[in-house]
Image: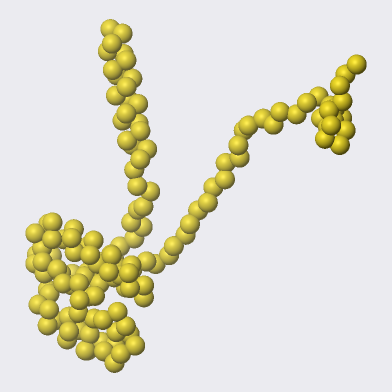
Length: 148
């Protein structure tokens, strides 16, 4: 009986620890066109809408990896458009769509950061600072006075 209680308590403690280690990120919004048809797509063009090249490549790599694990084909925008494509003349929407359609993709998946907030919390310590009853009165310029 006592062993069961100990095992149950240990299992409950372990489950509580694992639940507390969960992610705090959440999807706060999404949009889908009301007239969008529900057909199956096989090849996705993945585009992260950011000016930070390293973030763009990381996000596109992770999204492509997740889609390929589901058995879907992907084409990353970083492979089609150079990192400085906004500075070039291909920013015209017709040219961009032409390059995307040349990849053979039948869907475009975009992701963008809309708002970023960071939170900082300070929890003051609860330690006690040990101070003598008369504080510094027992010392005189760093020298201890001996009680007579």
